[in-house]
Structure formats: structure tokens, C-alpha cells
Length: 159
Image 1 (cartoon, rainbow, N blue to C red):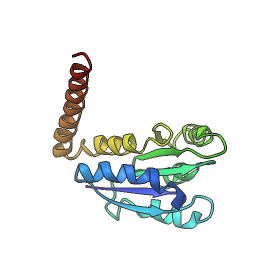
Image 2: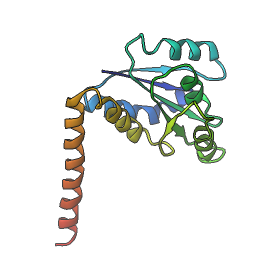
Image 3: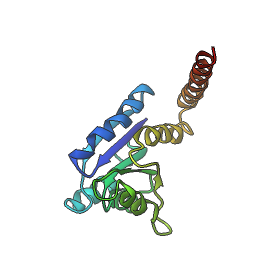
Image 4: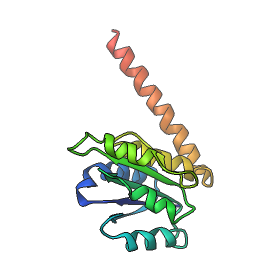
């Protein structure tokens, strides 16, 4: 099982590394690349067009501002693409979010919250769990632990 994470700029890495940590926690192999939809469009096309034959099963794409990376990747592959809109200094990431969710019919990009790298990785794990039952089991355990953690916090809070 393998995921890819692409980011439009090295400045996106502080957000992207949170997705890497989640994938690592679930034992999902991944590769991380810097590919710009605008500055390296031929590389973006090549990466997306060859991702499936390179063993990639889901792609996470993080970008800020115009945030076209996820859409460009999705245009060249049938693999699921998950977009992470990156918070930018201009519009606090709203520009990125709106760019990602306004995809035309036929080019879907699942989009998480602004800087929502952890959820992007968790969604990638859930997508992969359709094929890999061990990931489904791990996701169920993850959700149970979240529930137990909140219950423990509530109990400690109400003592």
C-alpha cells in the first residue's frame, strides 16, 4: 500500500509533515514530492500520469494561494486525490480552499480543511482500507482510542 504526497512549495512542508506522521503511524508507505502546478506543469503531468504504474494508490496534494496542484494532478490520473488547502498570508487559506472545492465535473478532488493534513492522511488511510482490511481494523482502533481519550478527559474534568 502506497500513498504520495505532493506539495506546491517547500514552504508547505510544516503542514505536510503532519500527514506523513499519520501515514507512518498506520504503516502506509509514502513518497513526498515538491511539484508546482504552475512552475513545473510537465513534471506534474508526468507524475500524475505514471503514479498508478509506480504503485501509488492515493495522492494527497497540498498547495496554497491559487492551489491548482490537486486539480492538475486529478486531471491526469484516475487515482483518488485529496487536497490540502494551505493557509497563505493573503486570505488565510480561504483562497486555497475555494480553488480546491471549485473543481469542474469529472475532475473530483476530495478536500479537507485549511491546513488539515492529519485528516487528509486519515482519509487516505480510509480509502486504502477498502483494499487492505488491516487498515480498516487499525482505523477502527484509532477511532475507539479517540473516543476513550475524550471520555477520560471528560471524567478528569468533572472530578
